[in-house]
Image (cartoon, helix red, strand yellow):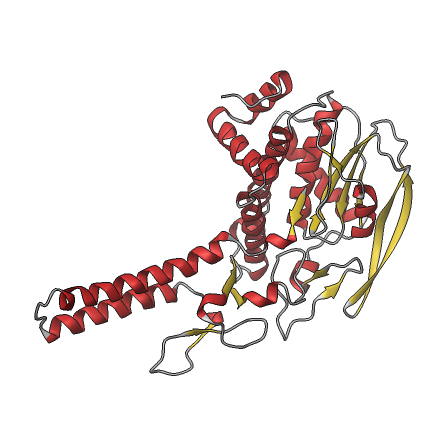
Length: 372
């Protein structure tokens, strides 16, 4: 499972600003229309139209969360204040982290501002991010729910396996799953990743590989993160080498330190790859296989929140945080524009909704294509 971190600015950011511009232009044209035609317009109608225009504009602006909006002058329109540098954001430079009420200047995406590897929020001036030691930073909220040791990993893995059983995806032989840091993930992906079609897909330098499924891996061992200790903003990880000579010939690697709900989604995606290999399916078109794996991960996010009693019903901050994480990761899957992951997801989702997961998966195993 791969994410291109360079694609941080979403289409939704641009759409929100374009919508505001269109409404402002439309209201201005409406006010000018009568005077352009040489018609006399009563003062009360002019004032009424001006009031309507202001009301529409304010309605749009009020959709922006109040925590990120300040009124610098009663006689001026509201200004959006950057949650990173605390300055006023120029109108054309407003970016937003969906679901988190965070607004920031576009320049912060590329000026070295730390980005949480979990929720994707940019670091604010008054927030201390934790350095995971492998070129990743994580916010305190995400770190509080992160998977950092073998016991936590096994707990969420059991949850994912239970979910997959509901789709008749069961494993005959145990598949080892290891938590690794980004350096170890890069060691195993430095030559690229297999696409399932007898060739290797190179990894873009700006991409982060969240999870990897290896069949008969080239490397003889994996260095797994077993535990960690924290000192201020930095952590120290304890690692252990495992030989990859087990019976299943399949190994799954997951980045350590990610939030629980995100780790589970990545596991669901990678274990679908592992299951295909275990039952002897090796030559699926990447768009078909990655699409199905993305849909399974997407559905697991909803299932996890429903099965989690607090997240599904509580109004606590922790419950809302989990729901926001769910929406964040679902959004990342939904807006992906790549051929295999993005188009593949949308095709597979359509098939799942029309035929149901059991029929789709059985059809793919038998014929290698999605049912039409």
